[in-house]
Amino acid sequence: MSDDFNPNKKGRELLAFAQTALSEKRFVHSRNVASEAVRLADKYDCDKDKAFIAGILHDIRKEISPQEKLAEALKAVPPLDPVEKKEQKLWHGPAGAYFAKSALGIDDDDVLYAIRFHTIGRADMCLLEQIVYISDLISADRTYADVEKFRRYANESLDKTMRKALRFSRDDLKEKGKDLPLYTIEALQFYNA
Image 1 (cartoon, rainbow, N blue to C red):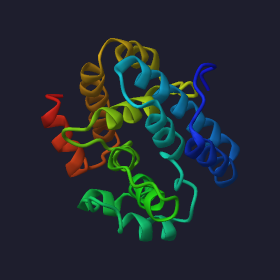
Image 2: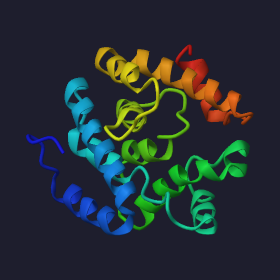
Image 3: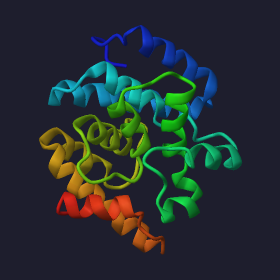
């Protein structure tokens, strides 16, 4: 965590909860995403406490059973699209948003949407959503081939990073023979990606 940022009381409580709820590897990743989200929030004039909370909670339901994940994801707002319903790897975002609201008392729509859409994106994402989406892509634990390029983009422009990240995601899914969620297709159109 950045030396000059101290989470508010709710953030500290959620950090402690995440540490007990997640495996060590997932917790480290979540801390890294939260740290990057705070850094980007500072750079782009977004609420750092919200960025921290959304970052620390973005994967909070990633390690629960598929049955629990789907049950929670089906209660998410906005609802799952048909591709999300059939792709288990996409359930943790919607399940996390539902859990954050129902079990952890998070009632801030920006935070809930940042958790909900951190994997697939959507059209017209608010600043916090973009920050968490990008932070998950470039967190300190990420080591894929283009990560340094995306880190540079993130320091230049969120819009540019969103366009490049959405294209990267689209191309990766196509290469794997996977369908694109409707929300991702709408995001590609919105960001001219």
